[in-house]
Length: 243
Image (cartoon, rainbow, N blue to C red; front, side, top):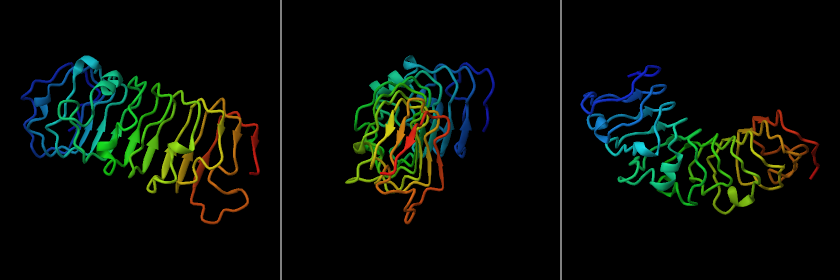
């Protein structure tokens, strides 16, 4: 059901009586509030898009009725401060099911997350977009992630502990780190990953990219190197060292 790109400001609690519905798009409207019981007859819903509305900390969103939800998009709503205060996964918070596989929180004015914030979905979450926020450091990443976008956050430094070797993200294939405030990509920082796609575009402070970023000299030894797409476009690199 697509109701996107309208001028909806509110939805009555009994508006949806569609128990078989699996996909609902309410993006690009003027919604400020959604009562939890709006979703009470939508228990089979798997995909929910709420991007580009007017939700805020006052909205007190709750999705606890959506027990089969797999993907949610809350991009470009002012919900970051509320997410930091209330758990995404607690029934008294946002109530997202712990079986959810994809979450998008781009441009929600998020500044800081507890280190273990995503622990409840450590083994279920596969896609996480958290770009265009004000995060200065990473948190513990869910182990089964396949796609991660942390672009356009004021992160100044990448650490090996962000992608730890002793607890590796062995399923991560796409990593987007565009528009950060990093000055270097240090050696070994990505050595625990098996990436197919790596984006490091528009990092205007980036001066150095170590040839040992992946733990070995990829410019000379490409054996067992899986990356298909690597982009450093629009950065300010002055050197790519030889290790």
